[in-house]
Image (cartoon, rainbow, N blue to C red; front, top):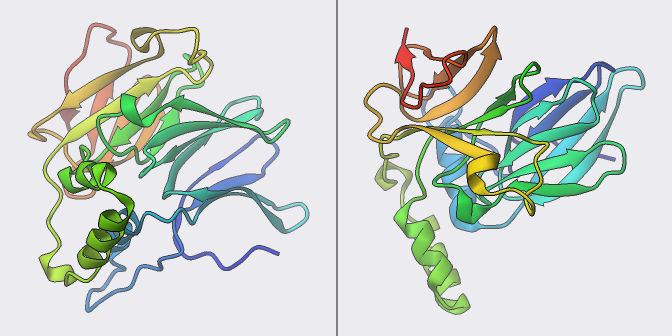
Length: 249
């Protein structure tokens, strides 16, 4: 039996019509006087709490059954399935990591590890023709997260308790940043260098696109959704020489 879903985040559908999706955290977003749920605050609380309750799940419409593929994730997020439906690629935002889940045997492997990521991965999508995947990064790693990682355990716990007690009105806003990680899910982490496995497309100051939360590849164009921009960013994947931020449209 699958426990209640609290924060369903992203999904993809395989050729078998199975639906693969992420349930990011057990912290349910509340509206707090707004017309829409405050998902951002829930994610901030999940980051501070540092207890992995995120899940990767599969729903089979032919049997109307849902099963959990992975547990214990620190905010499971964007997800994509390859054309042959042999594996999933998904983001663990506060790991932070990019994972590959093999549907044949249920094993997992890290594609991009936390020391290689310059921020928190969010939504992602893959290009079936090139095999490349694109994970958006809405924020660089926040200083308090770096500090907590260096503290002794008792100080770490105490500071997290204090931070969780701060009123949401005083929670700091996300600093403007725009980033996309391009990577190949079929390269070997042990045998390939970082330059061969992935590259970054950056708008480090967030001047054109910032707080990116979603990506969609369609006809060699990468479409970028944002939490704050009132337009869709577009990056032309057919122009291999391009290495900067996308143009907005």
